[in-house]
Image 1 (cartoon, rainbow, N blue to C red):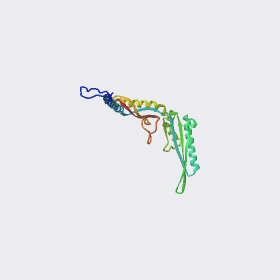
Image 2 (image 1 turned 45 degrees about the horizontal axis):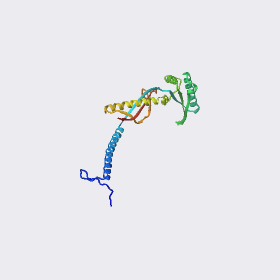
Image 3 (image 1 turned 120 degrees about the vertical axis):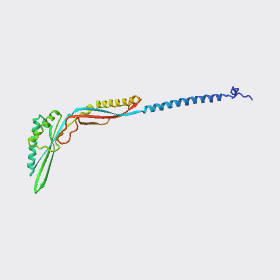
Image 4 (image 1 turned 60 degrees about the horizontal axis):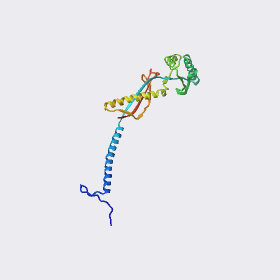
Length: 250
């Protein structure tokens, strides 16, 4: 019976080599090379991942001085008498004086509107007294005219109108949306400057933005908020925003 299988003579090493042995050795070599290359790529990938995760968190500030575009003056006054009709008549006289005051200053009739009224009474020593309180509100976008009115407010006192606590002009800036984009851009630029300084100190570079939080806008008096006796609000405002940004480091 003939045997067709081939047997390769032993090599110099003394081992017998068959075709199967050659295939196994080749596969082992390929596997070893694959493990080496795969290990290198895995390690390089982890290094890149660690580098990509490096970042710095900084804050950027932007401020801008603006002029208020809305003035609101609430005028509170009252009168007390032993009968309701007399108290009401006194309040009506004050109302007429207030209307005349603003008309003389050039405000349109619809700029001044009644915004509240209150009636109360109390009895003392058997005598009942009635108090009528009223509020008028001036609302205007003519800031310069509003400032002139405030400077002349003592004219109302001369006309017999006794201004109660809570009377005062308030100035408001209503055009925040018009300046938001530019201020956010300025705050972002300020934050990047801070990140670049950090990167310079740590011998690295600044990449793109990883995460950003705009923060909120704050509007305050340019020279401090008004408050207290003799301190009035002014139309000069300061808008401020602080952004928090994470920058990648490279």
